[in-house]
Amino acid sequence: MKQVLLLSLVAMTTGCTELLDKDFLNGLMPSVDYSGLSVGYVDFEQIETDFLFTVDNPNPVGFSIHNFDYALSFSDIEWASGEDPNGLILNPANDSEFSLPVDIVFTNLYDMVQASRGADSLPFGVNGNFGVLLDESSIVLDDSEPDVSQSSSGDYIVNLPYDAGGDFPALRKPDFSFKTIEVGDVGLDSANFDLVLDVENEHASNLRFTRFDYALDLGSGTLIEGVSDNLDELIHGVNEGNDNKELRIPIRVDTLQAASTVVGLLSGSSVLGVDFQAITDVDTPFGMVELALDEQGNVTIE
Image (cartoon, rainbow, N blue to C red):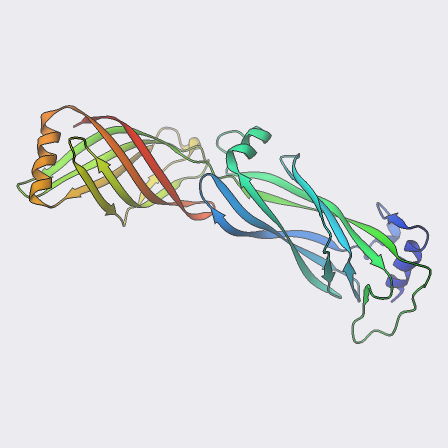
């Protein structure tokens, strides 16, 4: 209980008291730790997420935070700042949580911090002040604690500084380009070939492609739609040299009319103009993320 009385005495000296680098506050100050992300939506363009933080209150009593301000920085460059007027309640001798909702367009973030290729994450920091309003309604006592006497001279705010940080996954959209169409088994009623794409992966870590829902237009009114699943196509990151930069998508045509048309197109030219659209599932640092492809160009037939 002496801890709470000490805070009250400090607050009574002024209408708004800054408590920075005060030795007598050792053991009293709540500490803030980053605990993770709660992702609402993510793709390779943007993310909507909550930054989650845990506040450890070492005091035997809980109290309300009247409001708090924050500044969110990436690589020591401020991205966003503001104030939450709703505050929060700190539990006695226990952990409490608060969150900061953020919408981020990845390219805007990377341009701002001049992020380099090959980074899987960006360091971030959040700092600010918890504003504690000290009056009789702002003290929350544990059941085991006796009553606390409170001055009736007015309301006072104590600013308790906090600082936390961590690593934010840096998701980058890979670049695709056509390489070849490799013809496999063909017959009267089927045609099998692989569409091979070159992939530029700017992550340090690998990307794993597991499924493609595609529409491939070979021209002359020939549209092939299908799903290639159970794939395990691994694309190495920038630190792995030039190995495994190709993505192979198996295309299967199993109807007589379509197969004959496809065989005629593939055998009649060494280069074919194609339009490839697909939705694919990619295993990333954020987990499985959906990626849309829309590529047009000429492809060499082998």
